[in-house]
Length: 75
Image 1 (cartoon, helix red, strand yellow):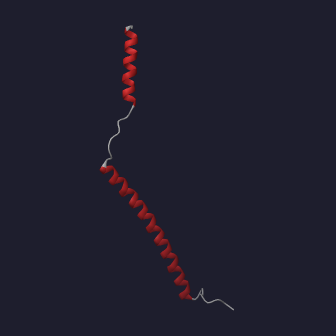
Image 2 (cartoon, rainbow, N blue to C red):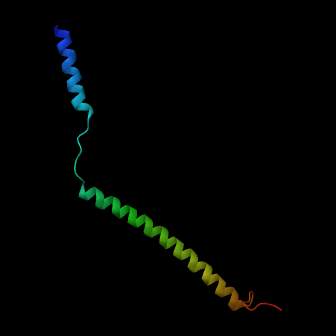
Image 3 (cartoon, helix red, strand yellow):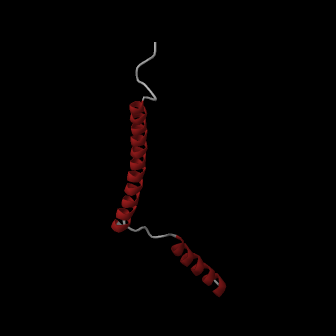
C-alpha cells in the first residue's frame, strides 16, 4: 500500500467515527423546562377560553336584565 492509500483509509475511518452522534441520557433540567413551558402555554389557552365563555355569559345576563332579550318563547 502506498502512503496515500493508508492516509485515505485512516481518514475514512476517522470520518466514520465522527459522523455518528453519541446518544446521551435524558436531561432532567431540560425536561422540566419543556414541561413547564408547555404547561404554562396550555394553562394560558384554557384561561383565555374560560374568560371568553365568562364574558359571553355575563353579556347574556346583562341583556336579559335590561329586557332586550327574553327566554320566554313568543306565541
